[in-house]
Image (cartoon, rainbow, N blue to C red):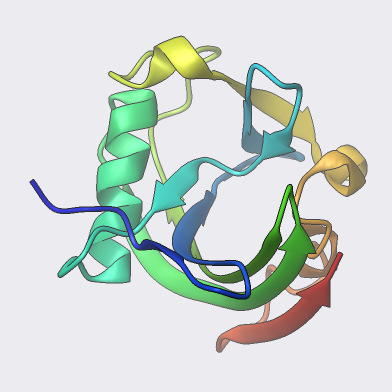
Length: 148
């Protein structure tokens, strides 16, 4: 089994992650974790796995749906402290899945998925996602360096 690309270092932890931006009208599909944290669906890239494949896998695990029309949307270099210093490289992909009120994938037990109004995007972590709301129609890849 391939291991997640979470690497403990003397200075802290390095994470390589993916997130998926899925819009429906004026809402985004979000994940709420048991600790109350809100984020886009996604997770850690595994060793030897391409980031786009990780996005497809993670979204399938969380929703049971196949991601379509996938394209790289943003790269966020995210620096934060959560018990220890983290340096995270986050690939954000855009894509589509069939609209449902609720989703149930194999990872559904540890999180809830639901639609959140784009007006509430400031509630998501990392907060850099809020900067993407005005970039959704741009072509090309957005690069953000975020320090929390």
